[in-house]
Amino acid sequence: MRIRAERDDLADVLVRASRAVGTRSPLPILQGVLCDVVGGKLTVTGTDNEVTVRTYLDVEVTEEGKTVIPAKLAAEAVRKLPPGAVTLASVDGEVEIIGSGPRFKLREMMVDDYPKISDADTTDAVSVDGTGLIKALAQVGVAASGDDARPTLTGVLFEAVDDGLRLVATDSYRLAVKDVPGVSAEGSKLVPYRALRELGRTVGAGTMQVALGEREAAFVTDHGRLTVRVIDSTFPNYRQLLPEGHANRLTLDKGALLEAVGRAALVAEDHIPVRLAMHSGGVELSVIRQEVGEATELLEGEYIGEDMTIAFNTRYLTDGVNAVNDEAVVIETSDPLKPGLLHGADENDFRYLLMPVRL
Amino acid sequence: MRIRIAECTVRYEGRLNAYLPSATRLVMVKADGCVAIHADGGAYKPLNWMNAPNTLTEDDHQWIVINPKGEKLIIDFGEIHFETALEMGEDPGLQKDGVELELQRLLAERPETFGERMELVRREFPTPIGPVDLLCRDGDGVSVAIEIKRRGEIDGVEQLTRYLDFLNRDTRLAPVRGIFAAQSIKPQAKLLCEDRGIVWVEVDYDDLKGTDSDVMKLF
Image (cartoon, rainbow over all chains, first blue to last red):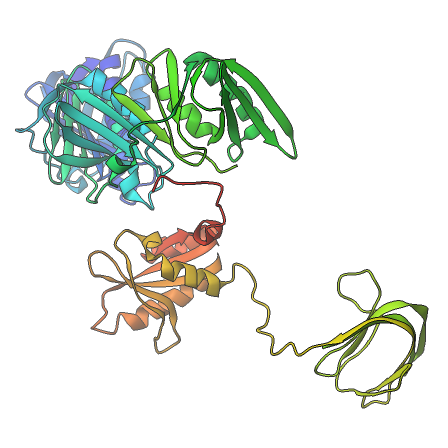
């Protein structure tokens, strides 16, 4: 195999494919990326056997062929070459990476050891706006759990609804729901969020084909393809958690609320909740930590309802407020021991349900 | 248990002689014959005491406690402020919070801690070399032997390995996979688990007990 490409382009496809390579893979071959050159096109594949990323680049081909090279090292080596054309060539068990001056020789890994990964069927794929999908996933992804002991909660539910696609994630303390209208999805599938959060940095935005198969989900753009094994389990019945309505409604400036919660979090750390004493004209945020001290702040806002104090975990509250795509945030509540609902004042397609902390 | 709070002086005659001048004290005579004299302070150590077996002879103002070695406590009482006696029955013994038995009980009630659709088959499942803490069956019907420790160390992994060896000889159960569970597991024990194909799980005791009650969940 021998190809020639621009440094930045080659580094880009190597780096993006490398994002699927696990840092602690039990199989040494999975520390490598497969470079496959056919018909003027380089395909780079990285995988950890759960998530697979393929990236593509049109290159100048001297000799077609395949090689497996150490993922992180090769990507870094190309990235650190001087600007200009780079040659990548497989020669006698070694891979040469040659820039204008510097030259690397890396030990080639065994191509036959690399897992045979076939592309998931995308004949039933739906076309979506990739940029919009990535933003929507970022909104709900904050509520996904990172605890592998409960795999169901580490995924984002892709669910077909009447007028499009609904994305749902929960870690049992909060629940985020985002509706993406105009996407003609079918059925529902649970896709690991750890793979979804890589979409922007692997296959990129633009028009994206999304195929949700029985075993795998595939996300394909002109830049590449990300395939991930879907989670085979039943997502909690989230619909019964969504309240019909709340008695109290507090509207605040998003930026001011974020700053105030950030200040309160200095005292609170993670385990002390921030109290929201809501009353006509706004809310008083306070944190009391016996061994350290306290923080109090009055935020002006619009409040409709009975005076009430409710407490939330500061990090979960911050995540929810951050996820709102609006300058004004609405916090709806009914009882200090029942979930509060966050959403944008003019945002009807995103809801963030947050369980309070008992005072 | 007999308890008397009274003004008293106490003399000890035995390996040495000791004397407690007059003061208000708590004198306890336990069902087994132990006698202990306490001041109003200190968590556990009496001012003077005599281990059972003892012989107690008493009159209105004096108790004499003698043990088989002839050592003697002579307690002379003045004003008696309070006295009572009651049958306390057999004590169940000290049960430390967080011991393995409690962890085992809690995890037996919540086998889903080890994976969705995990079901308990039996606690203390017998093997020829002793019982393994839990035997479960996972969602695919595979038997899972679970050994539970407070602190997960290499010894525990070795113990589970031996159980698995015997359990896998039973064709009705095999294949049996192993899970090593503890509140905290040392890195060496984790490595040994991974090397032997045993899954390790660190469990949160407070979470299992439900003592983290300030934190509420949606479901």
